[in-house]
Length: 365
Image 1: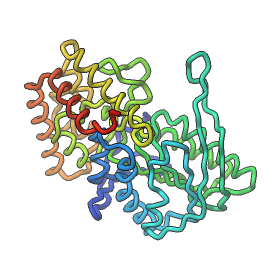
Image 2: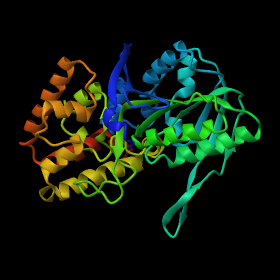
Image 3: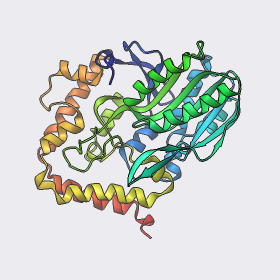
Image 4: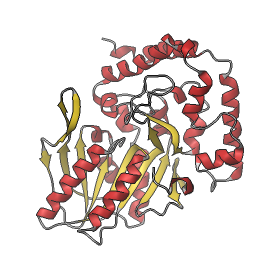
């Protein structure tokens, strides 16, 4: 993460129709970054049982409210939606634009597929494209961003297409369930774009519920099963107060393998998603006595269990939020830690497996 990250603070912007919006401040960024929280997106992130069309539906309300916010600020110009097949199909951009009476001038499509060589990923290849040229437009994108390789590949492809045809973009609005690496990527891409479009206004990026971190190469987590550049968790990131409060009011969501899992699989290949969730919890159940509970809890919370309130505020990037709220959240976390001391990791996994199987039993055909 860039050197500004320790200075960044979460600042509350508005609460409207159940949607809380926060912005990132004090980071010296070229672009605008927001984090939104709403009941349905919190449910999506905390309950992997949300699958199929409900994944899409969970994002409708918060997306619509943010588009209304951007529309009122006159940030949208001749909207052209870019759909990166297939994960981007989870994002209800066209529906949200329709709800907020925002005209969509056209929709572009790109496929980005992994190319394998000798069993390893050797790169990305675009096998299909349908790009609509909308001059001086706002390009609107929705996608999950972990390493950011797919987004970078597709954006460079589209931008080059615009340049070849003598057109340009005004700005880019990006909705994402994503990680901290996205900020570095978008900051670099903005500088790159301004080399040939000096008046490019940059990115407006909206994260749902948090700006998460990914496990790094060589780090499989305390559980020994996490995937680098794939699995999201809190450590080193920023989550909204609402998401933190809900997660810590429940027993198991904090310990899930990934905050979102594979978005495409949750929507279109549900059996694969079920397999991934159960594989993780079965691994926890089998290895429960070998896993250090305290270290696992520290990993998932993102800081030492005995952290002071002052250091906790800095670690969570909550210095600019109301002290009454942050003190309550800090005490809630302490209560969660204390309650976990009496929980058997094996029993937690066993209960989770049973609960998950029962909820999604209709897919076990």
